[in-house]
Length: 307
Ligand code: ASP
Image 1 (cartoon, rainbow, N blue to C red):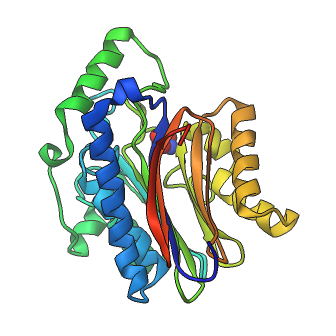
Image 2: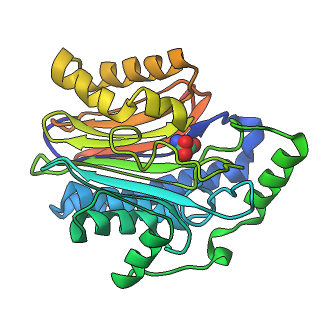
């Protein structure tokens, strides 16, 4: 994959196994990843910008209740839903992000608006939702975001008395990275975080350099997994730094970064697009919902580690 446009998406990483997912669940995920790829590819095919494509792909997954972002986000310990998102444009490394938003239908659109209509990078909580309202973004109530399955997962987790990470249930964060025909790259990530999160916990997804990064000199990255470890490894930026300073290719840089996250004890994955349009992914969990498409090649969607 090189030269033309490329789009890579993810829908989260974790303990993803055939028996657990079931045939219907698997089909729903594959269909949704395909729809996200098509939404972004339509932008790129028409000569659109990488950031528009990444945003379009993420919006599809935010609106799909099967993913832990927007509708279908996981519940906090207190039974609320608090969402995080970020975007970054590799052209000028401009970025926008939001954390702990509760009333904006598409947090990725809000992150984009922060990038474009404020002089800030990261807005939080009520202030971020107020900014969304001021800018006319679509609002949504708790009923829109909440699903029975996520509530069941919270109940199960509480019944087990889990204190922190629930590696089985937290997957479903979404992200997209794109390289457009003009050679620019962009990244977008959106998540509900991890089931049962407390105390205003914020993960890597909305942190520029942690879960999201883009730089035309190297490429664009979106991460998913146990966020605390991705923050400590500065994972998304690490991929780009490896390309820039060590001369690694994006496949090697993605793998080395996941190895580094793994060495700290973290699990998850990254998707990457390089400045020439090379697409890559790497993960150390049993699966990662993922897909890629580029000019002249058919879309590919995969879920399990052995695909
Ligand atoms: N990285 C996200 C977080 O820690 C969760 C995930 O990707 O599954 O909030």
